[in-house]
Length: 77
Image: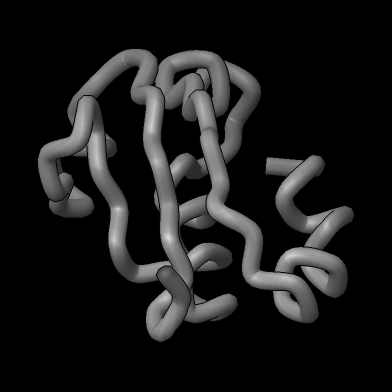
């Protein structure tokens, strides 16, 4: 979560394809909310999320203890 926020300007300016490992249980154990990571991605217009090449919805992502995601910004190839 901190890495994503710290690189927000670079990500927004360059629109890279993102490979993320979201540790939902660990974030919750530290008092955080993993949904904020998804909110940050959406704010940067990253809407196409997939797990193993299959589109993933927000609820599925947040139910998993650890989720490996690929995120693509809308309008990029």
